[in-house]
Image (tube, rainbow, N blue to C red; front, side):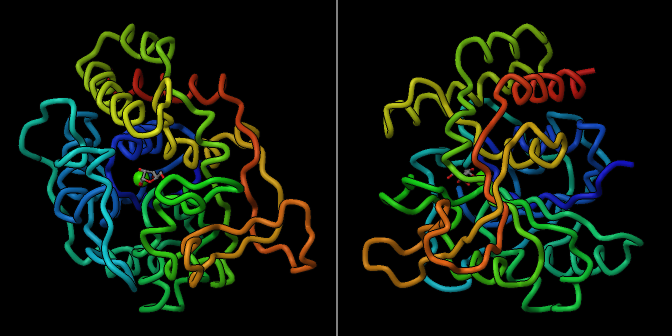
Length: 311
Ligand code: RIB
Ligand code: CA
């Protein structure tokens, strides 16, 4: 039976492919897409989620808008990476898919309470919405089977030397989710930087030959330019679909159970994910952390999802 999920995201080029994989993979049942401020402001990430549903023909999945600000601290966006719109590259028209609710937290709360079985939350943006939901409705923690989030890293960060963007944007939210008692899986840069959408991948997507495939290649083209200019990457890493793939096909992403803590106060390290891979602290394990990616299977899944949505 397909795993029911809610995808919380901040589209975002890689979030766009995560939405497509979540909608198309037969092992998953995408119940709702909730948006959060992150790569861009909430109005833009929400508009982008709508437009991705339009272009991918995703019709039966509610898009709901969550929080516009982090729980604490100043808002950071990633316009340098994702552009002014948050989805620069392709020319996409005004959204047609409606926003089902502007109270995304309340919508997901009610969805979780109404479901007969627990739901997995996949988060590919800052964890603000998930934390806000748990603070507002603690009872729903029992309705969430697991939180799988793209964020953090077992090593270097990307927005500061030791902090990855999603966790850096709202470290308190990540800490709340981590200590909620809900099983947590972290899919960090140490793995997602292996998911490079290189020329071969882009050629495979182009060969699908659909308007959706063309949009995906245009998204990747823009994403490649910013990753080259900022970090000198030879190809753009498609972070967010890795978190979806982890859930859809166990074995595509290798994980290890270990200790994860979030640095909240470090002068130079606020937002860092402190992963005790060598179990040196003696602190009890509290998370499953991604440490490996089967890139061949991963790209097969991504290409298959785009093809499936292209029919
Ligand atoms: O650090 C990469 C993460 O931050 C990805 O989820 C990207 O979309 C941005 O949200
Ligand atoms: Ca994202």
